[in-house]
Amino acid sequence: MMEWAYILLTVFSSSCGDILCASGMSEGGELRDLEPGGMRKILREIVTRRRVILGWLCYALSFFSLMGLLSVAALSVAVPATALSFVLDTIGARFILREHVPWKRWAGVLCVTAGVVMVVQPAPAVPALAGAAGTHVAAVQRSKNQPGNHQSGARELNGKRAAVKVLRKP
Image 1 (cartoon, one colour):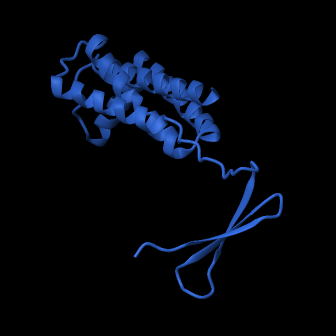
Image 2: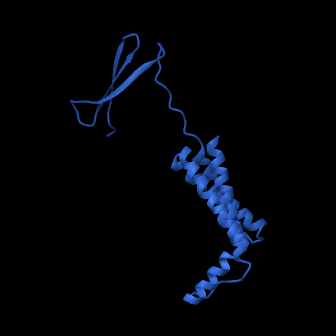
Image 3: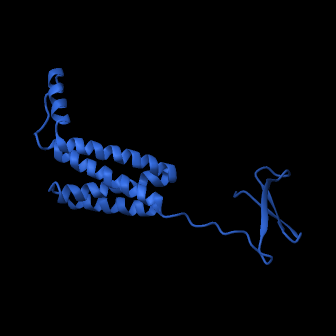
């Protein structure tokens, strides 16, 4: 449950930061002067735009919520789940910033959404070893007689023994 709270906070704060910064940077026109004197002017223009500053605050919140997410979720789930920010960014670009979003981009958004759904689903549970008595203990050891083969010994709690050889696929 905490994992999803962190995912949603990370995604929403990141998307808010993207939309606020895009909106703030489009207020004053294109930044062109890349000479040393011009860079000071550009920097001054950037740091005095309210929406850009609010966007930075949202990015900071997104960063710290991502750190929280990484403390409770596997990296292979956490980072792909944050790709939902691309979905929210596209929706925000269309309906808040009034950008034209072509159908191919919407198709990409659907692909990203499908990918996130596939990645964040929990892995299927591994079935437990069980027999008539209910519980078994299994161990796998390397076979001494043939390289690459493994020998498994399983013993029920009532003392009956069984051995299974697992061969490497040819």
